[in-house]
Length: 406
Image 1 (tube, rainbow, N blue to C red):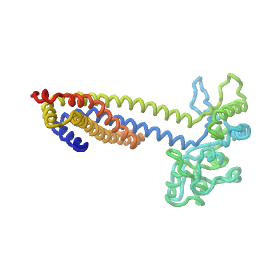
Image 2 (spheres, rainbow, N blue to C red; image 1 turned 180 degrees about the vertical axis):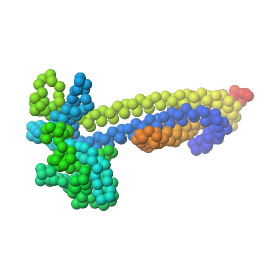
Image 3 (cartoon, rainbow, N blue to C red; image 1 turned 45 degrees about the horizontal axis):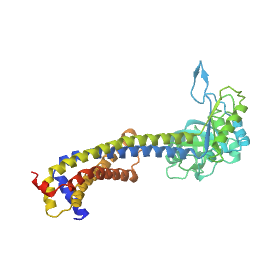
Image 4 (tube, rainbow, N blue to C red; image 1 turned 120 degrees about the horizontal axis):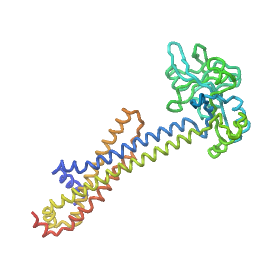
């Protein structure tokens, strides 16, 4: 009997007891559905973190002001406002491990174009910001030297703002109003990633003079934060150390005193988050795999009972010429079909649960072919492993003794 005939016979045998077959494969369904769901949620989370890392840029260090204390209570980050444009210039001049750096201010403002308006973040910065963030232009240009030093009324739009105000039209060369001040659009940024494109950039001096003021309100050179780009991935640690030493020196921080700034590596923090997500996903997948093993044990139990119930049938088959290998293949095929059907049903259930989670909780989920193949393949292995013992037991039955069974 060919393999296809054996599988058809196995399917017919399973259809004779549909409820028992369904209950037998239920463990496999639950196990595979759990694995598919966990892998989809884990892949979605890792993909989201990877997008965030790409959006931040490569080899980027973020320098934020420290936290102030009031009545013994530490306030939120960035309340000391100790960073200045002079710090940016010093980093560029004295830290050879840094390729580019830029200070920035940011605030919310309404952007108006004819009868359309959009509320977004306005970021005052220099061209170094785009270099640090690896942020190319989709159209137009960046600020020129004169525009940066003379507080010119020019703006570069993020892709979301450009789409909301101009649709498919090209904004370059047109005018928008930021807090009632007319600005010429000189460029449009390429799409960077989630939560990154809803922004408008203006020259740093323009932001200070026109609507944001300086970061501290006292020191006109103060900036809200600084971004710096190391020359390479290997130089990140050294660049960070040299920046910290330089700023401590510039801010006259003596040994034992707390820094009034904080240098962080956002990509490293996100990468750590991705590693943690991967570990949790692996742990949950292992737990879900236990359901597959339990399902396999259930299949072995039911198949053993089936062999006992069909002993006379086995005897008749052996009497008409079937070999032990044929009997073993028949019962092994039944166990395999049970697990494959359970695996496919589990994939459908797992995909449904993943989509439900994505819509109800707003989580990113990715159901990839690798996860599906892995789940179904593992369920097939479970069927072969746990189905072998009852199949082997059936193949070892003596035809005479089997025919005597009622």
